[in-house]
Length: 135
Image (cartoon, rainbow, N blue to C red; front, side, top):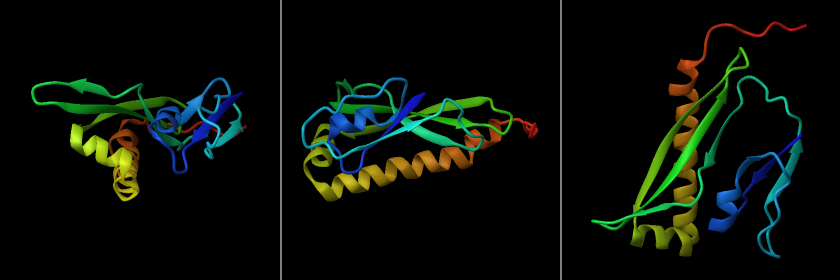
């Protein structure tokens, strides 16, 4: 059994929890309105999603914040293929996203547009043609 954490209008802590978890995640704060869905172990072919990989990394010279996102797709044959991309921001851009709801929405939409493009293009092309037959 697994759990999917879906951030609705979350903070950076909630965004880090978004995705699939083996154990039911604890809500990080009392006003958390994120959704937690309980699901089965079987992921359907065609499913594709992105997960934030840990905390953003701070790089210097010049100062910037890099967030890593892993995108996973379930192929028709049941195989999982994945790839990763980075979101790089200056410190000012990172703070603006955290403090401004419109900037947050734009960054969230851009991240999901990138995930959707990877699902439809790069990862789709890495799946085999074989389809698991229905029993």
